[in-house]
Length: 503
Ligand SMILES: Nc1ncnc2c1ncn2[C@@H]1O[C@H](COP(=O)(O)OP(=O)(O)O)[C@@H](O)[C@H]1O
Ligand SMILES: [Mg+2]
Ligand SMILES: [Zn+2]
Image (cartoon, rainbow, N blue to C red):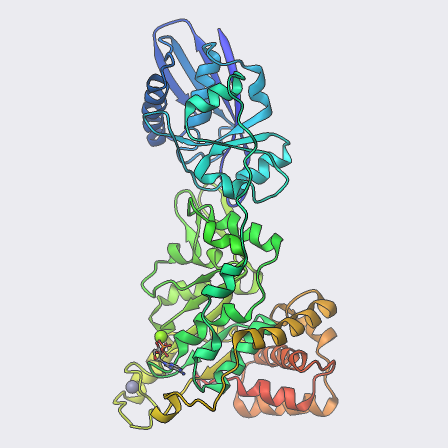
């Protein structure tokens, strides 16, 4: 009898490909079939759509209803298609005009009452409908995220009746306007580097990590401030750019329905527990979802108690550490998620934690210590640019001394920003991302210094990869000192950020 076409979008990695919802109502025995949704989702969706239509005082057609979600081979998880299906039924049964539907895209879960509920993955959806030049109708709780692209049209809805009233021109909805946001919240709520007493060496390393995007491993007994240091890294990093914010929110929106905390441009800081599964860490599942490494995109992944993580899980980190993306392979398809994160890790020097403690409380055997350290593989360590010890402080060092003024995060951030600027002017990327070719081009050394590094690598029994790692770090140290050339002093300092776990 009649065919209605409604546009919506699916979720594929951080893409949102178009889904066409076709509804056909024909004579014959009453029935309601949905084609193109997975079996389990169909039944629940049918129940919600039917109740929402009836409870909104519309008629649920007692004829043959066939709904087809095309293309067939897209993964169509979730309840976001409730609204487009309900609208298709209303249009195919003459309770809504068919024509105006073409200007819109719809997504939203329906409650049995006809009210709309928030969904996940809204920003990719909004970017897709903007590109297609259609107006997006979305549950009100999702609207703030949907308008992030800035130049798209979004209508926020609370109930199926509102959608009907708008499309029949009885009561028009106006474009959703984002609430005014203040960026002041970012600086106020942040933890400051000045709260950490002493640990000058560790703070200097943190500054280098922030300036060059380098990964960092801190080794030291419990209670020396390793977690404090890691938590304060975002405070000495520049806020996200607008483009970065959109990328980060697109990923977070696949997991959370509310991504408001990210809107202030704060860098993500993810600290998964060491019991986290491989899927939780790198992503996956039947409908692949991003893991912690993708949630940490453009931000920090903090792995506390590094040797306690499953070794297999740690090995998976190697590839994204180099490429900045993760490819999740399933039998049917591959999904790629961005995962350009900065790895910060912490660990104890031995199983009991107190190796090297001045009070000498460690009772671990050398065999136990070796086994403990070996849980972090050589190839992973090779990808960690900065490796330092964070030793125990004496009690007088820890107690407050009014004449010692610790540097605040803002003071450090100024130097970091200057160094980042220098890197982007030279190579359009952070030093941690320099490949072997870049290193040849941008990290040239005086002949005497070349020999100096080679000797050091021989003497210290370092891997071939270490050579490049030392050069990258030396480049960042030079940038922090606003020096165009890499000098001997920069190399000497770079060589000091090396805790020899495996020797
Ligand atoms: N250098 C420091 N300056 C100030 N407080 C510190 C310092 N080191 C440790 N602390 C105190 O000890 C607590 C534990 O520190 P934490 O960072 O969790 O240590 P770790 O991660 O090395 O075990 C902190 O909450 C803080 O109160
Ligand atoms: Mg800790
Ligand atoms: Zn010990």
